Image (cartoon, rainbow, N blue to C red; front, side):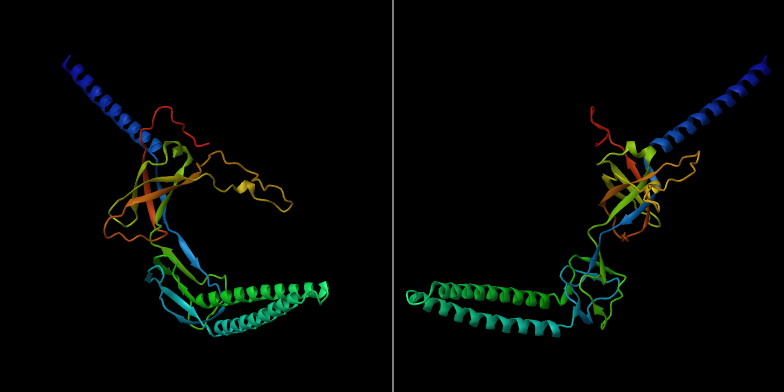
Length: 299
């Protein structure tokens, strides 16, 4: 009898251990399957691409690569010689148009005083010439203002505060209007994007708190879900040579879950942590208790 109870106790102990292990495995599986987290995260920031408004040779570069700049700091300047000549030419044209306007208006005024002695056609032509001269004078003034504006834009300044990155501009380079030659990372625009599997997306809502762990950085960053992406690319939607969709001929039995970008706003940045666009991050979202009757879709 004693051996029977001893054997029964061993079986019960083994069965209890197996049940406990199965219960723990179920909890771990449930936590993994339902808790929205991802190791596929990236630090992002707004990159301001700066292009000059005027063309010309660069005569001075006032910044260096990876330098911090404040908004309004001078980045580089373009040789203003041609722009100054354009201002002088526009100023001379304004003076010429001014004298012509005065002359035409005086002629129209004198003919208006003797309109009974001249033909109506002559009087009309004189008045029209005075109006055209006035319009030409206004056009010359606008051209002068444009020339002055171009001269002011010969000095290129930083539109935001941040870091100059990948600077390859040198004195002597030719700057072309509209072509980017300096990029600045806006220091006040950092955020994190986490690519979550579609199976976990229904647990995430805008406003949920999030924890961000940067690779190689010990302190954890706090944030919240700012927005959820509403579209990703589809390879089957690419257009073939005949203008038809280029659909893949095969379909795998094992379907991998698509990853949807979720934008995470950084609420707190621990002291000593330096954010760099492109850093790898792990993101975990803590779903909050939502109000009863709240819709689970924004559509």
